[in-house]
Image (tube, rainbow, N blue to C red):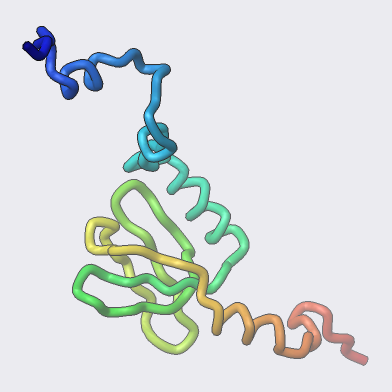
Length: 119
């Protein structure tokens, strides 16, 4: 007669201690939903006047640089078009604009407006 166990195999596997893992996948933890580093990142972009692309939840992309931000809004300054205040709740994501960065690096450095010699 086969011997019957009191517990099933699944019950035994679920009662392992937290330090016991069966595979690498069991040890993997998902990244946290929020890292609370958003302010740091936006502050860096703003201070450096880094060109950014803001992708809104409706799919629209806005290019410019971040002039101002607070807990609810960001202000995008654009060279030709009007400046915008955008609610952060309408932003899907934002990233540094590779085209804008390339343009600003490739432009020749001209004379600064305040350093003109008048004779």
